[in-house]
Image (cartoon, rainbow, N blue to C red; front, side, top):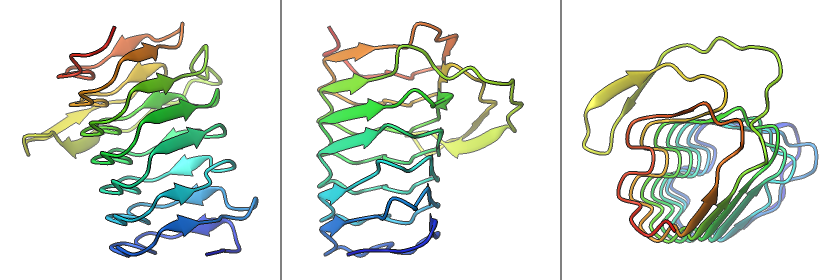
Length: 183
């Protein structure tokens, strides 16, 4: 499947359970909230020029195995939650922080490759974010640059290796909770 334009809009392919592969043109930069929510069969999507991924964008896409985000600047809360087939994640040097529950329940992740440093351009003031924790309780936090958000990698039970950026300033509550196989 091929798309033109710059944005994949909110809910565009939500619950398209038979969608297997997506080819985005080089001119696509933004994927909005829940665009591929519960696309259970999605195995392959190129994210090479994507700089913004919204909340819940790939929620429940449990057939995805690898995510490469070389140009990513912003990832939304719960963006890849419950992508249980995900094995590797590579994040590029423009990312400023990892939000709440971003990769929670990605039970087959074995490795995460971060850049050497989080991007540290001009200071940005973030709004307070409200999210549901894995137990269904409403929580809030205020993101900051160079941080790993709460429950970001919760229950990534096969995670073996992670090299955090050298300028990581803050790892929030339970960011790696129940990641018992980290070496």
